Length: 408
DNA sequence: AGTCCACAGGAAGGGCAGGCGA
DNA sequence: TCGCCTGCCCTTCCTGTGGACT
Image 1 (tube, rainbow, N blue to C red):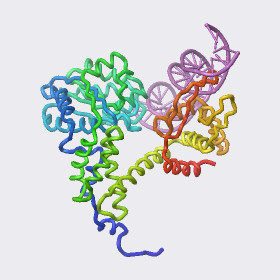
Image 2 (image 1 turned 90 degrees about the vertical axis):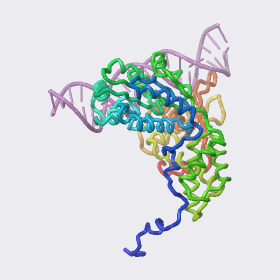
Image 3 (image 1 turned 180 degrees about the vertical axis):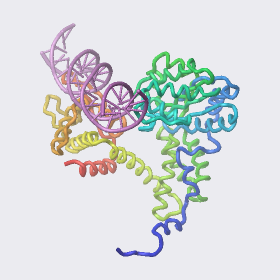
Image 4 (image 1 turned 45 degrees about the vertical axis):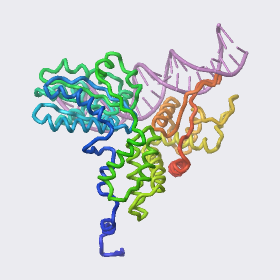
C-alpha cells in the first residue's frame, strides 16, 4: 500500500473556503425565530390552543394546505412558543409524522410513538393494540395535564388503517379522569375531510384552518430571510433569489422546494469551486433534485415493484405494447405490463406475483409519482389502467440503466 | 336495452417473522 | 417452549364498472 501524503484526506475540505454560514437554516425542518407571511394562521392556532394555559381543553383542530405552505413549521413554532410559557402549567405537546415509514405508519406504531414521546418505551411489535391504548391512557392520565397531539400527514395513516384510531383519539377524553387531550390533524389532501366518518369529522374538525400557497413575492421574502442566516454575504444574487422563488411559485407556492433549490444550487456551485450561486447552478439544482428523487425512490422499492417498472419502461421503449386484440394503439395497459413483468420474472428465475398484486404495485408506483396510471374504459374491450411515464429524459435514462443492471 | 370484456378493487384469510407472558 | 399477539406481504374469491358492440 502506498501512502500518497501524510496529511489527512479531509484537510483540504476543511480548509477550503465555503459560501455557507449555517446550512441547516436552509432545510425545511429548521424553525426560524420569525415565521413570515403566516401571522393570521399563527394567531388562529394560538387562539385555539391558548385555553390550555388556563386548564381548559382546547378544541380539536384540522389544518389543510398543499406541500410547502408552512403547516408543519407553523405548528412546531406554536408548540415551541407554548412550551416556553407552559413550563409549569401542565401542558404537553406531542408531534408525530404519520408518514414516517416504520415509525408511525400503522395504528400500533402511532400509539407506540406517542407512548415513547410521553417517556415510556414499548416493544415494536408483540402487544395487543388495546394494551397499547390502555398504556397510553394511563401515561396521559398520570397527572392533571392537557396533552396536545399534532398528527402530521394524517391522511396517509388514514388511507392505511382507516379512521378507527381517530375515533378512539377523539373519544378518549371520556376515559380520562385527570387529564385531557386535543388533537391537531395536518394534511396536504384537501378532500381528506370528506372521506372521514361523520362522527370523526364532527369531533375532529371543531376548528379548521387552510394554509394558502405562498406567492412569488412571499417566497422571495422567505428566501431572503434564510439566506441572511445560511449564506455568507454576496453568495446569492437577487437574480438567483427571483429564479428560485419563481420556480417554486410554479410548484404550487412550495417554500420547501424553494429552499431545496437554493441549498442544492449552493452545493453544486461550491463543488465547482465557486463562492457564489448563478442561475445555471439553479437550473442544475432543479434537474438534480428531480433526478435524485426519482432514482432514490426507485432504488428503495422492493424487487417486484422494480420488475413492474422495468416492464413498463421496456414496453414504453419498444413503442409497442404487444397486445393482439382488436383495440390496437400504443398505450400501455395493465394486461400488457403484467405479461411483460411475467416474462422478466421467468428470465430472472423470480416467482411472479399474481395480477391482483401487480395491480396494487402499479397503484403504488402511481402514488409515488414514478408513473401515472389512469383507469379507462375501452367499452366492450374492458376496463383497465392506461399507464404513462412522466419522468424527464435524464431521470428515465438513470432509472433504465439501474433496472437493466438489476434484471436480464 | 342488453351483453360483454378486462380488468379495478374490496374482503377475507394464509403464511411468515418476531415479541411477550405464562 | 408454547400460545397469542402484532405487522406485512401475498393469494383467492368475488362484485362492480364504463362504454363499445349487437
